[in-house]
Length: 250
Image (tube, rainbow, N blue to C red; front, side, top):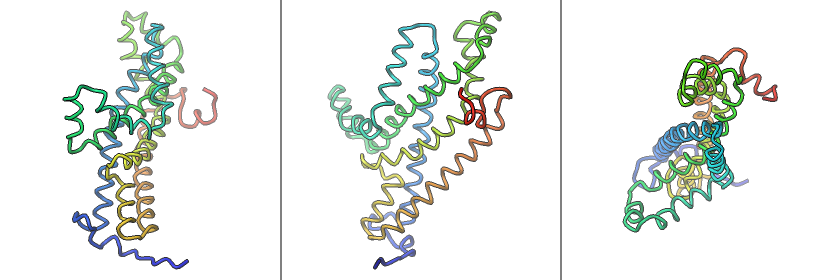
């Protein structure tokens, strides 16, 4: 194999004028973290709402929530990102569409929204599963205390459910970081796109993607370690934990 290894390539000036190739990778990491972080907030908020509705007594509300989950969970993320970026501006009123197209950070906004809605469907499934895993006495106890149904969810069911599903949410958090790489297809210069740009300009393929792989690994490990610490702090004795979730059939 006649490949010319050059690990010093990271300190050479990038043709985009933004500094060295290493600087470009760091910039890509920041875009990746910003995209994944904002999308995760959207996913948690929407996922909690939709997941709660899926366990509500109103059948029509449950059907709508289930339709939401099936829509966003079963369409590939890449297709959804293309729809958000290319199709959505054409479907809204002309003024709005022109405004969306003129945004300087349109790929970033599109990636955040697309990734957030896609992941929210997965979070919704976890939330509804966590609520259904609670004993029926929890809901009945809230009613016996005179709480309304929204108050029962707010003060009794959701706090317990979220503590139960932390292991599953940890997996989703790691997944959203990796899924952010799909945003390169709409022009966002996140980590994978930065590594690809480095490879195209310098022809140092292995160095570029080795660095990207190691960075993804470090970021994911840090996120998982923090999530595991949170999991141990909030674990509820007698309910589903990371160990029982793997061995049990709940």
